[in-house]
Length: 150
Length: 143
Image (cartoon, rainbow over all chains, first blue to last red; front, side, top):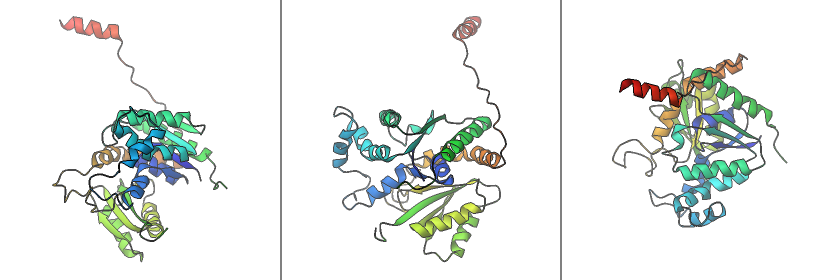
């Protein structure tokens, strides 16, 4: 079983496909769960504390907006932890609820810098593209080792 | 890890012609696990201890494995930071994202069916972008 980081980082389709083929998806949802269950982060709607932008300094420079650093405080450790990655380009919903384009660019950049197996595919818009999308992801996930790393 | 930390929520999105959200809910009610379920417009949300939720979700998925999709959710159902009951209505944060992906699920489900049957992928024909000179011609012809 390999820890696979997915981009968009809260994608239902990618998270499901990774789990379906026997690997562990590294997705935003789990990290958010850890975060919101932490004592001290209980002031809705804020889910982060002032510590996060400081932690984000490991991944983004100080002149980068605090929002990017705050997000990177959660996404950055996931990238460090990843043993493989699936990046979906041109996903229209990657902008909006997910936050900002700067974080997305930085996330993709940092994933590409890692020396891990990476699959990059385009978001499907038709049935043929959907088939190609699933086949590529399935073949990539099947090529990863299923045994637990010691 | 104590019990409180180990409570998880999974979103089960049903994009099946043969399974309804109520069927999934019934599956949970039949199980003896101590979990709660909430039906939503796209499927169900299952909350409970990690092992029980994973077991039940696998049972639900087995009902139509290529057309039922699952992902974990950070917030539990009814959490004040997300639940629209206390936020004055409107879609909850993250709903639009999920809706966008849900529209794609029939295609993904079909592709998974084809993958299981070892059908080779069809050739993709990308629509070519219009040439600048051609676009200029069109603009000028309308003047």
